[in-house]
Amino acid sequence: MEKVLVTGGTGYIGSHTCLALIADGKQPIIIDNLCNSKPIVLDRIETISGKRPVFYEGDIRDRALLDRIFEEHQIQSVIHFAALKAVGESTQVPLRYYQNNIAGTLNLLEAMQAHGVKSFIFSSSATVYGDPASVPITEEFPRSATNPYGRSKLMIEEICEDQLKAENDWSITLLRYFNPVGAHESGTMGEDPSGIPNNLMPYIAQVAIGRRDALSVFGNDYPTADGTGVRDYIHVMDLAEGHVKALNVCSAKQGLHVYNLGTGQGYSVLEMVKAFSDAAARPIPYQIEPRRPGDIAEYWANPAKAERELDWKASRTLSQMTADSWRWQSQNPMGYEE
Image (spheres, rainbow, N blue to C red):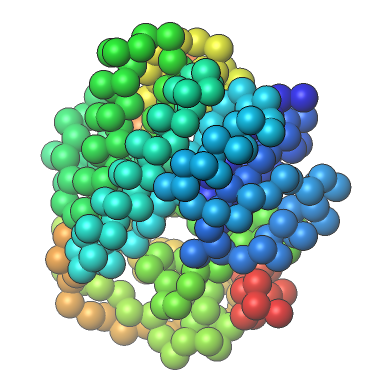
């Protein structure tokens, strides 16, 4: 059975990807420092899949721990999710973001190199496209960053490219996600951010369940159909299955592989509010606030390359995204706390 090291594997995207890996007959080995996740996630993975991932609580900057994991398991590939990921916070504590995201990745790549593991899938982000000149966005678009979080993702992409130039027998896959939303259809796993949510969907869900009074909509004067920002929202299980497809197709192929994982469809903030209101059968109060610095009007993916080369396509609809989010939130009003 293929063993895959999943860094950040108890987090939102990591945990759902572990389910997809298990469903594909692989064994995820998780390392996570639990800074933005909870150990109960392991119970939920086991309940849904019938398999409990091997779990190491620790930080990817701990080289001795990484060496131990590689020595104790015949790891064939690494899927790297572990990162701090709040754009706003990254502008306030940039050094923390660079230390965690970049130093952590360097440590991980050095440990892989030392143990002869050369298949690496990196959880990148559409933020590496900066403020794109046009939409939809293809993988060839120029890259830039508008904040330290995005810059950390971009720098890691460049580190990966440099490593491949030096040792061309590696397989490195950069998966650039758009906006992951939704939850496992069982309602037992979903997004449970610490503190005030930074992302739209968990914030809407917490308003719907009564944990927060109203949604703040930042800006209604963008050059879009209703004035609010437009994004490409993708169901987390579609995203998780994209990682498994990338692993199966790319891990045996040396070189650099770059894919957008999105739906190719943009929805505005107010369209998301309406869809969630329909799913929850209740109004979502919101108030218009000034634009946030660094936010851009619209972006969505051209995901044709992933469909062509990975045989992967996002299949879950907006109504499924909102229904699954609401099922998770309504069954777990306080997230994983209970």
